[in-house]
Length: 86
Length: 130
Length: 88
Image (cartoon, rainbow over all chains, first blue to last red; front, top):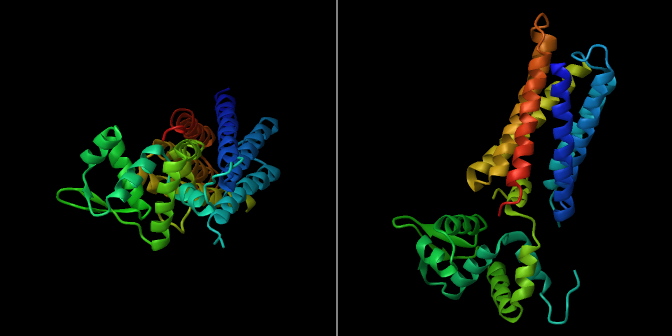
C-alpha cells in the first residue's frame, strides 16, 4: 500500500517536473531543459511499469534499460551544453 | 519577433541575451557606463534605481560575474569596467539604442525567462564558469 | 550486472547534477537551484540505496526506504519549480 503510494508520488512529481522543464525549453530554446524534460517524463512512465511487476524491489531488465536511457539523456543534455560553439 | 525599421543591431541583441537578465541590471549597467570614472556603493545604486539594497547587491554581483563591473573592498564599491573593448562598444551601442527605443529594449529584457531559470541552465555550463 | 551499472551510473549522474546546482546556488543564491540540487542529491542517495539493497545488504529490504527517499527528493524539486522558478 505504502509502496504504491510512494510510487504514485514519484510518478506524479516526475511528470510535473517534466512539464516545467518542457515550458522552460519553450521559453529558452535551451536543449538542456528538453533533456531534463524527456528524462523525467521517461522515468515517470518507467516507474508506472513497476505496478506490473511481481518483484518490484528487484525490477526488470527493460526497466533498467529505460532508466539508463533517461540518465544518458541528461548526460547528453549536459554535454551538449558544453560543446564549444563557433 | 518582428523587428521594425530602426533596429537593434545583432551584436547588441547578443550582448543583451548573454549578459542582461533583468531591467535593474540593464539600468544599473547603463547608469554606471555614463560615469566610468565614478565608484558606486550599493546604496548609491539602490537609491538611483529605486530598488532595495538587496536587489542592488544581487544586480551588482551579477554584473561583476559577467566581467562588466569590478569591485573593491573597504568600503565596498563598484566601478564600470567591461572586460573587453568589444564589450565596451556593445554597451555604448546599447546605451544609444536604449535612448532611441526604450520600450523595445525593455520588452526584449522582459521577454527573457526568469533569472532562476537562466541560472539553472548556467549551472551546467562548465565553460563559462560564471 | 546491468542493474549494478545502471544504478551506479544513476548515482553518478544525479550526484553530478547535485554538485553543479548546489555549487551554482552558492554563488548566485537562486532558491530554485537549492531545491533542484537537493532533489538530485536525494535521487543520488536513492540510487545508492538500490545498490546497497541488492548487493550490499540483500538480507535487509530497503525497497520502501529507496522509494521514500526518491519521493521526498521529487517533492523538493516540485516545490522549487512551483514556488521559485519565476523569480528574477
